[in-house]
Length: 324
Image (cartoon, rainbow, N blue to C red; front, top):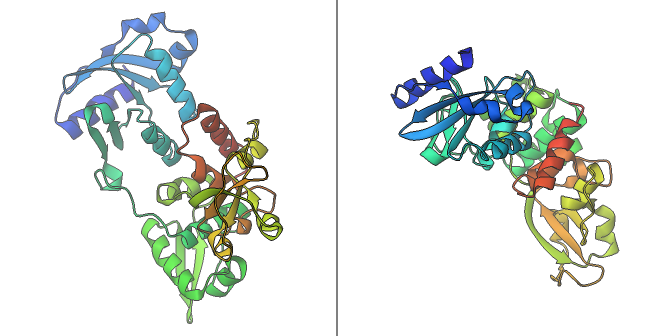
């Protein structure tokens, strides 16, 4: 028995007040070799449900889409509950696993067993409650520092210069960031100064539970040339630019809602010639990307609820390719 085995037993007893017996699963010997090398398998019973514990023994964290494929393979042999176990899982991966309702246990940290009606995470100190998301302007600030790798110091004046928001909006952003504590906020004279202590992937993982899709709404419309010049490729069009995914039949572009509001754009049938699907964004996509497509992080947030396996795989890949 390994350390994670003991951790599962101890954690289940601590959380559920139930003693469980975990024993090696003899069916493991009939599995494909790659599964035998990646996992250690144990059979157990939790709350009168038969469960297969799949302990990830790898040193490198696997993408959620890969885990899901492995569990699908296991279901050909084990038809009841399968629980993924790893010593630590990043915030990003936990979010994706929960989105896909994949049961998992991180000993002494989180237990998510949706088929058993359980979603417990001690470190959040909240049961079944989603964290309050950041406002669009604060989200734009976090994504700006991640995309530009500029972590401060940042004052209200500089905030206005680079993002166009008012000092009052900057003050609200500081108050929101104090909730998740990714940065230090100091005062010099009458100025409040922001400097991020979390950087790169660490900041992304910390902020991810508080980030929402930037898309407010979308519609198929004809765009005047003035708007087309300001637009960025978005949705599946942007994803095809960043990956091997094919271009969608109808191009998808993003525009800031403040820009779109000045025009009256009637919705049209998708099949009409020259139509674009316009995503109306809560913040200006042009602030975060210098290229023809929206930035990768906002793109991920806009598509992360897409259940197409090709899209999910491409999203995982573009995050892996980022030079954090």
